[in-house]
Length: 317
Length: 244
Image (cartoon, rainbow over all chains, first blue to last red; front, side):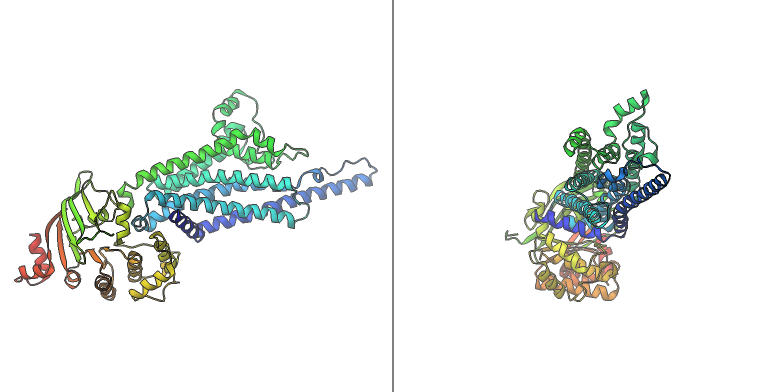
């Protein structure tokens, strides 16, 4: 166990000192931080328009004016953009983490030195997996803390306990969603000899999962898929979308993630929204699919690494 | 490691095939405890394949091998505890310091107090004051010495060196040679060294083996080699005489 932990800690240490990873991580954290500001600015802009309209109407003798609907919305709606950033930048970052984890050892030539230590290849791989999970967990943890702190610092955005719990569940789900992409990056890094191809294939799959499948299932345009308010809309009526939804719906991971997250963070801007329990219950199939997908990728990685240790040509190339 | 043995490396009909190519052909070899064994052979003779099998990195196609009395396949973890390995082009994590790299290898070798051990090893190879420098800034010679440090940090019984002087300048070669001799004399390590440089063999090795097309064609102590080929002018001439 101590060897696995040593390898895991080394994985985290080396990863956090890599420029590419650090750059992507910085972008991701800045965007997460920006999401609450963007939410705040959007709310402030709409409120100022409302106030100007109220002033105009009152000046013209209209007194029966409804109250500002934004005031009734929960503060959590200001965080809706986070979904888009995790959906886009987070998943790319996750692919890079998985990819680098294996390519680094192969490219640097450290692998033979590691394999002559009194550890088995399985221990080495398990340590790396644990390290990847720790790195991803710390990234998600940082963004969660940033979200909560920014809500405390900014006006109009004070989260209540229920909101923080929703945000927490959202980040837990995001962790598993990103884990899938991390394992995908790792899988092709092990399987493919060419470094560029090992990155290109998971990115192609990412495009399919993030855009192609959700478009086929929901009938939305790519821009609508990136709009936090419209990303969870139901598919238009018709045989094509009914068939797509039936056959491709279950494997549309991006769609599952955005759909569940949108409901959880109240992206549809409803004043009264469903409880956490009922949302989880209604989306249990989607959660299960995400977990199974990550599990399948991990299982394939283990299978390949088992074969890899006896594929001597790869070690010495 | 507890087994009281004199033969520290023993291979029996060790064979390795890569598809249709036989890299190693029924190698029967014995290396005694405390020897500095020079493994000679031209490019592609099978020297690196032999080292890779003995260091458990490669599985042989057939045959068996024991190091410190442990089977390289069935008792690979015990074998790994007993060996140190320095590959031809040793690589590390360039964005980590020398200390961080050595600490990682020390921990993987089960050393409980790496800090003390690293200081001790660097002192032994006379390479101190570089602990906090990143490996990316190191020259080939400096890397090679860190490579030696990682290979001996757990005080192995056998040290495998694959072309250790490759790419080093004369000063680097001299320093490395001194370290090898010191390890053998003071730590009583058995050294198994793949090399092309016959001059190095003459200065360092106690026994030589010559590999040709995967077959061991000659093995003798250096003393006896020099006696037997006393009419040859240089070790190079002796090598060609053996190969013929």
